[in-house]
Length: 177
Image (cartoon, rainbow, N blue to C red; front, side, top):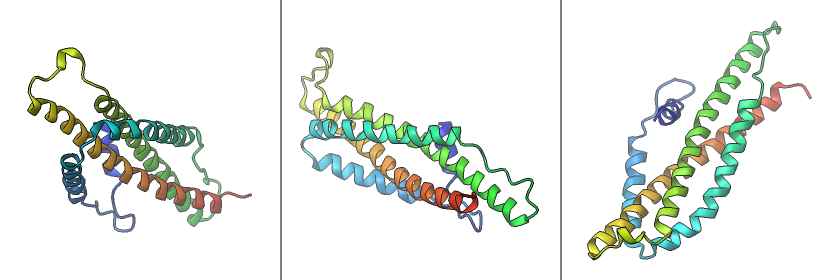
């Protein structure tokens, strides 16, 4: 839950510092997940195909997370230019926020991976369903959760990629070659 809160704190307008409203985005992902899970007939195929994709993207997320954790903060304390100090502060803040986004991204990827495994295998014997309604609920519910987590993952991944590009472009600009 702390990763979710830290991720949510990063959604604000950088100029005005006003928090962005995210409820409409979550509702959109919820509605799309509901529709897709009800329309799709092959929940096991979705789970199987997402397992390898999420595994690769989870590795990507950990790679960025470890890089940001290992990277030294910019220190321009010795600079006499106020602009350099402000640039370093903004870049260090962006690095911390990307780190929070990536931690959340990794939780979403891991959750999606577990849900994909959950719906791609047959339920164990003690969960065999005599009733078709329960069986449908088991697979459709799992599929809904998987699509919802994957939708959140994709939006967070897009945000991480955009902010990482900005981070590396600004870092390259500030650091001497």
